[in-house]
Length: 266
Ligand SMILES: C[S@@+](CC[C@H](N)C(=O)[O-])C[C@H]1O[C@@H](n2cnc3c(N)ncnc32)[C@H](O)[C@@H]1O
Image (cartoon, rainbow, N blue to C red; front, top):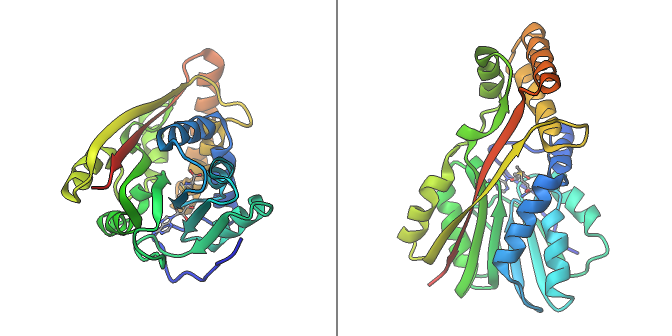
């Protein structure tokens, strides 16, 4: 593993406790199912070169690394030094994993080097997403695949608490620059000349929030976000009590609606 370089700026910081909880969420069944969908769509071959934009703690890198074998190369890029260091640790024994800390709109890798470019729940956080898509296209070999998963954030979240309080909590977590990106992504790819653009739904409807569940980690993230935006402790604990009560009484659900978009570069 090599190439950990310093970052200038990213729009939303994934570091410390936020990054740790994000990495825990990615290890739940939701993260596993998303990675399976990506791997199945990528249909990787030995010796290929693949890039994961916004690789986070490196969980997908590890699986790609094993799929492409030691003659292949998987490059994880992320704007957060914390995430890059976590990925470095996770992939410590995998010689074909390379990590670069940089902004996704300026990746210092030669053009047309990748057999596939992938990204999971990252593009929606990036203001200049069109620049990142152009960068992805630049890195791709002709006829290679682009595979992205982004969430439809308007449909993401908890159901059960009083709608008004629930909205305050959900609003606190709205940091995405393009919360409904999957709706625009196919058109953006078409404009860039991609072909065979397809979408696939990956939906979750979860009725409980056990300690190690995707909803549990998002409950923690939502409370952190609410605190940082100045929502009162009274509102936060009211919301949490209502969530717990709804779960006990069977009136609780957590929904996440993600879209896998795939396309081939011309
Ligand atoms: C929600 S996390 C997803 C991480 C990983 N793909 C996963 O599924 O577990 C989004 C990641 O995108 C990274 N990110 C956000 N904006 C970025 C940018 N402009 N350039 C590079 N990385 C960025 C963050 O640091 C974070 O690690």
